[in-house]
Picture (cartoon, rainbow, N blue to C red):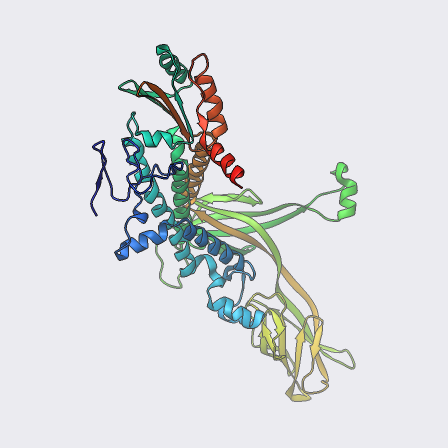
Length: 541
């Protein structure tokens, strides 16, 4: 498509509505006299000019503000739906089992559509990428032609351009010194002055026009930072449970760092030591004052064969408390929770009727034996072990996890008078004899517990981009909200002084400023032609 040459000699890109240099309306059919649309200075936007190739259609699709808004709305709706059920990281069972088992057909659909791992699903990443593409194309489609038009504008403007500005007026009577006085007032108001053949263009606040595009740059960087989190190693947030006395690998560190939990400490507020809060503590009961894990950080010093115990070097000891994490190599280990975990259960084999016992045995819940020989022909065998017992939908015993939160056993009790054995199902506060009444029973004696510290291991290498994007976005907000682009044209036309003015917002402020600039001169205040049009429409109505 050919460029368009204006009568002033400036060559404009095809699709330009107003000449970039003099402001003349290039479409000869548009002589309606209505006020000019100055949003983009009448410049040629690519999306409104080209629509032939596939690239043009893609560009035009993403340059639409409506498309960008809908992409944001769809992403927000998806994010809301992602909070209805717990995400994959918060469940203990495999997701393909958990969602259907716990939530039926809705859970199954939830899993199949990828909502179980929303922020890692391909379609959610695609939505974020499309929002970023829309921001880039929207910005380029508008800011480049706007910049070129503002840079190319001349001081002397076409008569039709001046007449169709919102603020416009013609002065017949004036003194020769009025223009010089106006110029002085403009300089006092910090306008930048350009002169050409006795005409004046006063301009200030052009930088505010770039505020929305600075916003877009900030949002693009922010989205980039968000997408960095999906790259392995850039963002880590993993749960880590470590029993007292145990050493565990810190997840997502490439088997490089290990943490040993020496002791977990739980402290409560003491009414005697905190007299000010005595009544509140009496009303609330025990209130936790401190969660703390005394840990040792180790680093692996050499490569090991699979299954071989790693050789570790002690780096430091630290007391991990709430809001006081252990930090190292970009990682932070936070104290998040704790639990008391059963480690062993003690039982005795007894005659139900007489209460006589025939031996005690203790089951290590981490590694239970299959058989316990009590001597004299008395043996207890474990046929099945459910660490976290529950009944499934079919009424069959099952386990929710491998953590011994609610242990249950199926025992076979072999005695001299019952050599084939008797079967008993034993759980906490529950005993079931599936094959009729037994003579013998496995009686519960006690449990052994162990504190387990719950940590959150976090690393965020994308935070710099998110912070930078947020700062740039706020700069754009301030830039566009607290300043405005104002232009005043004072031109000599056929022995008359023509005054026109334009601003991208805050017309009231521009009018008040013009009153100050024209003070002490014979030049009259330009008329607000938009108000005149509105008054005319009301009279016609």
